[in-house]
Length: 491
Image (cartoon, rainbow, N blue to C red; front, top):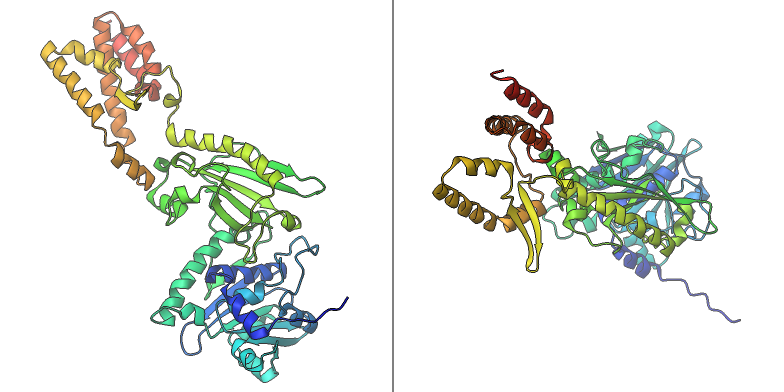
């Protein structure tokens, strides 16, 4: 067979791959993956927006020998079909180069190896001049002048990745200083979420990360201190594979049980609704989140559900994983099982959202409001059979009774449904009476009901009904005290 060697033209390919679509936070996360693979326990991110601007990532992992360093700088340095070590965060052998050069025009990698520091550089401007794959090997004098190189020397281990000529970050901004400050704030939030399990040391080796010396704080999106777990971990086995996909569902607390700060923190800038769904982790690193993979609709009532899905790197070939490691789509066999699981999870979220109190889940309860399905749609009606209304009707004359009835009809027909829906959709905190205020009011109403019942010879019946009448069924201990007080009075 006759073949022609047809290598890509370096300047065009390298400039083209800059448009893969990395954000700065995704690009830096990709580099931290390499640090974790190198068994780092500490990663420092440093940036300087003026003079000779740069971004530097310094880790304390194992160094790289000269041959491996050169190979690491090669495009396609490893095959995605190769079996990787269990803790290897890489995939396509492109991340270091494509992630870095998506943000800058000059990439330098320096590493500490056997007492020496080695360094290689891709300089896009130089490559455009030579027209070749001209990887630069830095001399000792050039290495000594690199920003942050002293940290590498002090550690006597690890690797430095340095970005210079930050053209993509500055694009469209007034000043690089302002742009870089804003972007690094976004990087901080992104890394605190994506690597939260590493930052906390939860079920994985702990890795400390800093930005300009400020320590990153892990952000667990599942709010485990207040969330509930509605089912045991589900382990999905795939035919012909020993590794399993592990699924753990969480139901966040109702917004009324969150503080304003907690709502802002766990809802983020897009709100709880946009953050529901699956959270896919590869080797304990968050890849993608906020999607149900079209298994169910994203709606208001499922927005408290978040599902952690753990996949090992050995199953990469079954998931649609992109170069940026920012999306992952499950294989059909996993998707089928997830569809079965997600129904249960969604229903639990709906119950948490719709039925905050025990009394609202019991059809035998006398509610203050009744929900009625009609041919025209759903109606919410004030319960005209509520015992409190019965007492009021006994105490007023016919004219007043008619006026009260008409007023209640007006109230139920003028519910601010649209405003209420918008507030719930926007996750505004709906303020209700404080517990002590409601407690006092309910006790006073109970006292009136029981005293009236006693005079009519119905004391026992009214007291027994408190168990099935809201709001009295939330205060049964207090109802018992008031009952005994009324019962024993004047004996």
